[in-house]
Amino acid sequence: AQRVTQPEKLLSVFKGAPVELKCNYSYSGSPELFWYVQYSRQRLQLLLRHISRESIKGFTADLNKGETSFHLKKPFAQEEDSAMYYCALRNNAGNMLTFGGGTRLMVKP
Amino acid sequence: KAGVTQTPRYLIKTRGQQVTLSCSPISGHRSVSWYQQTPGQGLQFLFEYFSETQRNKGNFPGRFSGRQFSNSRSEMNVSTLELGDSALYLCASSPRTITDTQYFGPGTRLTVL
Image (cartoon, rainbow over all chains, first blue to last red; front, side, top):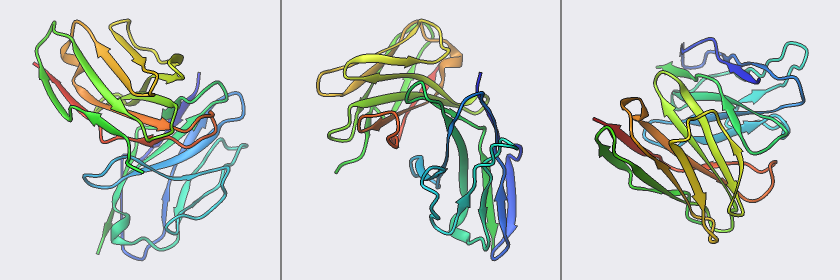
C-alpha cells in the first residue's frame, strides 16, 4: 500500500524566513511525487512535480529515495505563499493520486 | 481553455437519498478522476475514467459509482446517502496518459442531513 505523510498540520513563519514543508512517502516501486497548493477560495492546483526538477514561485523540492522524502523548500517566504499545501504520490498503475493530510502555511508580516 | 467545471456547486440531501454530481473536463482531456475531501480523512481517490472505461477505483463502497460519456464528461452517483458522505467532491481531468498533470475543478459541496 502507498502512503503519504505530512507531519505538520500548521507551519507558521515570518516573511523572509526560510520554509520547509515536510513530506514522507511509502511505496515499494518508483513513484512520481507532486506538490499541490490551494490558496484561499481557489481550486487545488499543481505547484511542482519531481520529474520536472524546476522551481515554481521560488519553491523547490528534491526527491530523496533513500529517505523516501519530498520536502518542499523556499529560502524566503512571502505573505502570498500562505495557503494549504498537499504532497501527493502517483504510482505507475494509473492516474490515481494519494495525498498527504496537508500542511497549512501561514506567513506573517 | 476553460477549466474543469463541476455542477452543482452546493447540494443538500437527506439520509437515504441518492445524488448525482457532474464534471466537465477541460476540452480535449480524456481522463477524469474523482476525489472526496473531508476534514477527517483528507483527500481520497474515488475512481478514474478514461475513454468511458473505469481505469482505477479507490477503496469506497459500491454505493459510490461513476460513468463517463463519449464527450469525456463524467458523473458520479452516491446512493443511499449517509451522514458520513458529507464532503467536498473534487473532479480532476488530464489530457491522456498517466504521466499527464491533473487539473482540478472547484468541487461540489455535498451536505447530508
